[in-house]
Image (cartoon, rainbow, N blue to C red):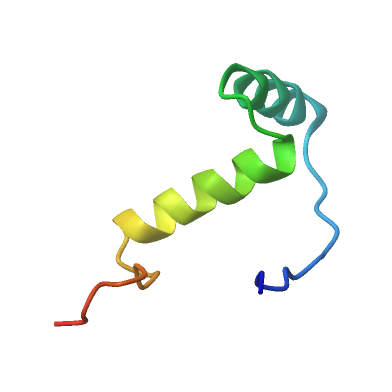
Length: 57
């Protein structure tokens, strides 16, 4: 069973949105999917998101 996702409105500067649209297209992702990917990556690097299958130290 897939995880339920939390939906919420997000307001972005048009220039940021255009840059994200292009970047997402380059990576074959939707803008929403790419934002989630970038946030997950940043949270992981900052140690703020538990990685699935990894034990906490």
